[in-house]
Image (tube, rainbow, N blue to C red; front, side):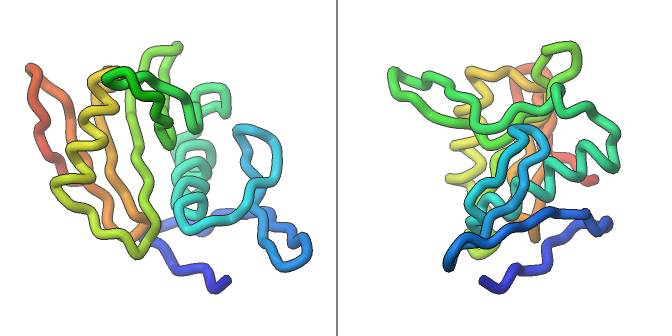
Length: 142
């Protein structure tokens, strides 16, 4: 698999392994190798960004947490916490997936359960940031 160059200023030190015809990437949070899918490639960039650039502890990051939304079980991609309080909810899409109003609304619905103060919608190339202030989302530049 040809790994696309993503829109991050830093180069991260990823660990890979190959098993037969499949490529795996080491996840610093779960401390195991995961199948390297396009979405996982994006998520691992954000994991490394928060650990190596923003200096968060791995315990402050939660991946693939189950939530219940309208009676259905969903999984969030990445949650950044501070003292167990949800701060940033990150929804990762594969690089070839366009970020649309529909994908933003999906993230906002997930956040209605999580209640983070900021959400990030990303495909690794484009990143959309929104702060949740006074019961409304305000888009911000970063």
